[in-house]
Each structure stands twice: as structure tokens, then as C-alpha cells.
Length: 127
Image 1 (cartoon, rainbow, N blue to C red):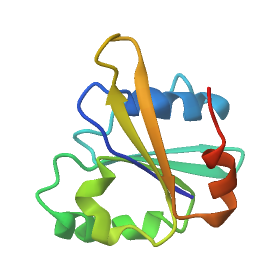
Image 2 (image 1 turned 180 degrees about the horizontal axis):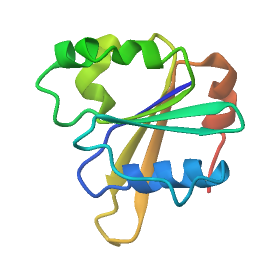
Image 3 (image 1 turned 90 degrees about the horizontal axis):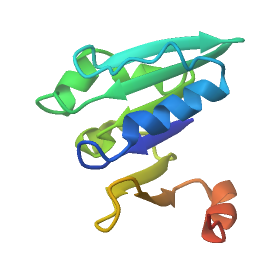
């Protein structure tokens, strides 16, 4: 499973990832992969890979670290994933993060999916 997480700095991508990791009981494990490109986590045989590809010069660097091999081996959360779009598999969940102009504590998430099984759910989802 791949989640592509584009959005401006400070828009909530890492906080969102913290929420997913906390679901797996890994809330005390998270650190931003800004300088390491990818952090790896595992809980109960579930592998989670948290990427931050912001500092990559181009998609070639992603291929050089074998980045696409992670996509087949667990849950992948890719901050700034739009920067490596050509390396992404055909099916993934795309969640764009935006800051609310009226309230600095509110974020707007726009979900786009290439996965048919999720289309109906997100089409009617409101919170």
C-alpha cells in the first residue's frame, strides 16, 4: 500500500504519519526522515516505510537507493511524493495537505485514489 503525501511545509504530513504509526503502537518511534530519505518501522510483521523525498535532486536519486523496491514490501508513506511521480506504482492513495487560511490549527486533506475499492468510500466521506 502506498500513500503519496504532497503539501507545503508544516501542512501536517508528518503528523498524519505519526497517526498511522500510533495505530500500530509505534507512536514513540517516529522521526522525520528528512536527511535519511526513509525510516523503517515494523510491528507484528507489518513493515512501514516513511519517506521524505524533498531533498532528492530528482527521481534518479530515488532509483539509486532502490526506493521502488520498498513499494512491494509494506506500507509506504511518501512525503513530497509528487517529486518522484514517475517512480510511483500505478495504484496508490494521494492525499494532498493544505493549511486552512482562516485557522492555523486546521488542515484540509484532499483525497484522490487510483484504487477502485476506495473510490466509493472517499467519494461520500465527510468529517
